Image (cartoon, rainbow, N blue to C red):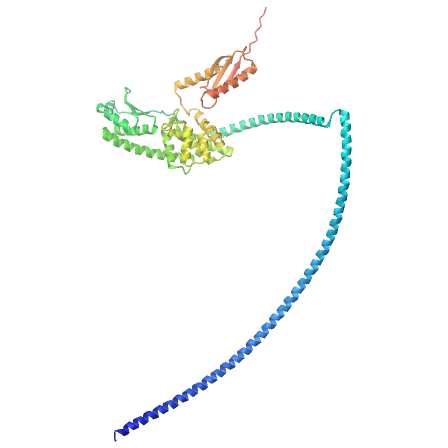
Length: 509
């Protein structure tokens, strides 16, 4: 029993605790509900106030928009009224213009009728005059017209021929004077050295004993050297010299350099010869490239193809009538640039064409054909402009075409090749040229004697006075000039002078 009471008391305490907790919880809940209701009332009150404010603002905005629309409506209405007034004014103006146009049309029609009547009267009067003129002149209108046209045509043709002749004489005089000025300017502005070098390569020897060492046992050394370089070595009785002969100037230079190194070194045998020749080839190739680059730089020509630079450099070892071809090409480039500048042509293309005009000579021994055509094919293949290709191909007149740039290059080439001291020719060739010149002059009827003077730059012809009169002498000079131009090759120009002796003979008896 004593145990039950504490349990009951605990149960009662727990029940009381639960009851008190429920009461407290209920009290707190009621308080929260009351607070929430108060908050809801405040929110509703604020929402009502906000709604009133929004409604007031909406009314104000609506009133403002209404006023703006009313102002805009009044402005548009005023503008429409102005447009209507302007349109009505334009309609009135159009009505006035239409009335004026109709009035003018009526006047024009009236004037056209009057003009037709006047034209008819003029035609009738003209017919009467023509009839009267035909009666007076006893010629029809067609005959009179033809006669007048023939007379006018004859007068106009004569006047035109006279004026053309005067203009031709004037143009020739002006062109000759201008060409002389241009050539004189070009020659004065181009100052180059006179080049007269031998085309043979001669290597000096320290002693005649070296000839035997160069030949070697049973000629093996000289054969090895000739096979390695592609040249011919001439070892004759000339003391202490060896002559190198080859159509290829580069090979000849390689042989000269290699032979000089072998003589200096003293070790001469086939294996050593091959080694030295290879070094000489490398050295000459470097020289060729350097000479080509220097030539392009001196001529002011940029962006040349590497292959063209090598070919230009090879011209260093090529000679024409004793004139170095590379120096000649540089001189032609300078002259062509000056002439092109004076004529208003393309100076850059003239310089390029002048430098490359003889490029075909660098390979002419390897390719058949004239060097101008070979050079034109080479530079065309290597991407130069068509104008430059054409100028190079026609600078000797072999292509059958004629361009301004081609004439410039041909002129510069002739100046460079014909100036005093530029070229050297052998005595045999010189004598043959003079004999051919005199032979051409002697081939004409009435020629008594002919003399080639001034190194072949002038030929004087003595004619028989009883067979050639004064007028025939002028014609003979022209005929000889034409035959010289057609049959001979010569630098510069040749002056032809025909001399006719006049004798007055009388006898005293």
